[in-house]
Image (cartoon, rainbow, N blue to C red; front, side, top):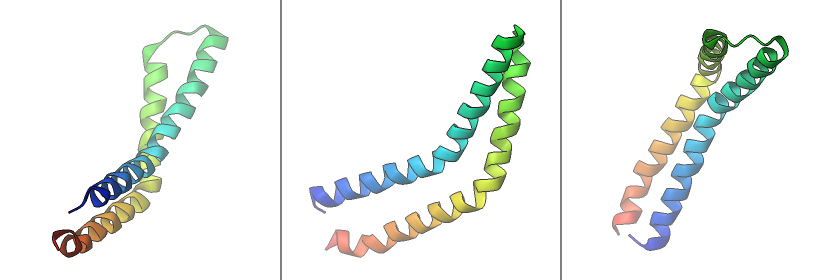
Length: 89
């Protein structure tokens, strides 16, 4: 196992982690920004008003993109298992 193989696997792992977390993080960011904007315009400072919409939106994002996320993770894992013979040689 060479240094370049380890770096390649690490880069692939970070890219997969970025791809899998992006839909959830972007959704939470967008909803959080919208709720913060609404709260600043109406001067309502209620914690549940900021928390509940984010939880609902993230849940919907997971439902919508969950199949794609699972497929991406399974393909990445299969690719890693396929690399094992090459890494040991």
